[in-house]
Image (cartoon, rainbow, N blue to C red; front, side, top):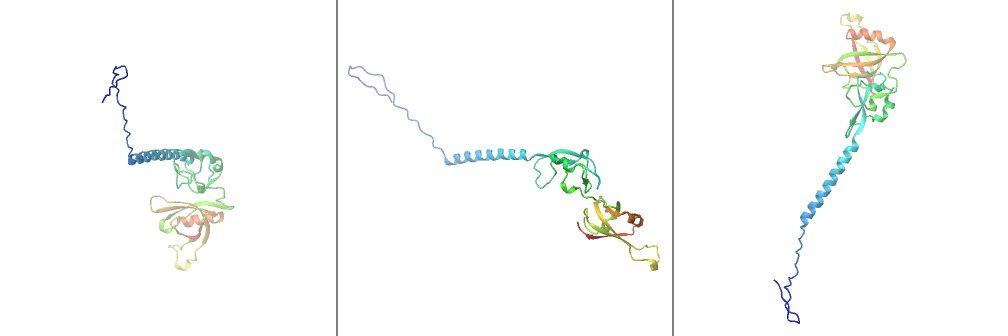
Length: 219
């Protein structure tokens, strides 16, 4: 709609347009809340990404087999990146110097992360001791798992080929578990620290399958 005005001289001015009224849009509360939620979720996603990156670190892993009791060298280990690692306690790569020179408390297998519980600076073989390995069936092992430091008793069993009258009481030998390996078949390999003087007799009895293993003290 246009308006025409007349001034005092009788002339007619040009039409005057009425002012334009701008209608303001109403912001729906639901859309506003959705926008705030999306912004918050975006911030949480960024925070999670930063946390994941920070959780990635360098740790020590076994590069080649290390037998029980052998000293660990720098060549036995390799540095690998590990992300997360929740529930794991691998040795950080920066602590390499603390591990090199110590002995393997258990058999170290390539491709596995190294933990401090797998190394020791305590002597596994005491003075006057030697290490032997016994091949046993699962039923001959006195516990589901034997651990380094467990104390066991080796008892000789009677000779089946001997007369009953000559079957003497079993001879006993004390030993300390160094490690136990469980192959895929129904057998166990038990590594023991034994007094040097007892080694010949135990080896002979083991060859005749005349040894029983008794767990006397858990580590």
